[in-house]
Image 1 (tube, rainbow, N blue to C red):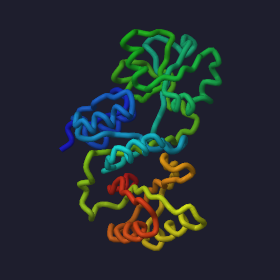
Image 2: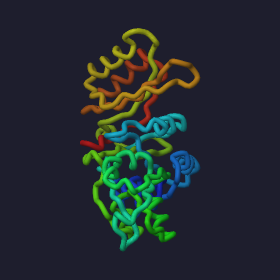
Image 3: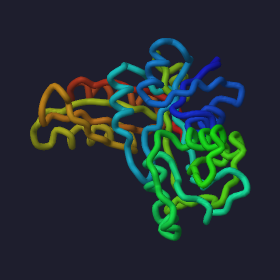
Image 4: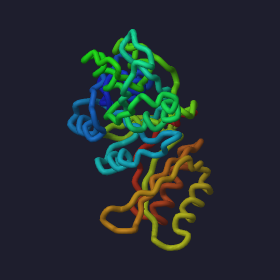
Length: 275
């Protein structure tokens, strides 16, 4: 039973929304300002699980989080997708003409850049977290300052939303990983997705051969991401997500990849959040 979960950000953040949707509203969210602190809380057994964003449908992969999960030998035990809707919010009683500055996470600002072209009088300022800005506005009663955050943040911190869904691309989805210290407790019969990491020989066709193995074993490649091997310049690890119908097919693929590749590591075996 999950009772506590570490999240990046404060209540009202998208990580907090994931904790409520994936588990339930009774789970206690431990607020962490950085992903390093999220992992530290999990490793120090301050929480039962952690939530970490892995990729966004617009911005792509969050590579440092892959490295944290890998380097700290954590295990992905589930995933959850959130339709990220950005909203402009302020203290009650203000109009958009009253706003002089808007603070938010750099990614949120980037995704809403087109909206603010209509309001050149507003200065955009990068900050650590979307919901934390909303919290600060409420706590310090900051007028003429706006936040870009979730509807939940506006409700928690009693802010008025001046404009809903201001992101340029309306369908803006983020994939979050549910991470634990130990391997998945999901029964094999329910596992239909996995995240793995491996290295290949630095010669022609090495990666293609392993990808062909996955195809022959009926695995569907949903993501592939390269990352430098720090100790060896110009050598790369590959982080790969695959889906499958039968866990036996994945086991077969693993046994072959162990032989044909190097340093195969299973980062997680879990239920496909899209199925």
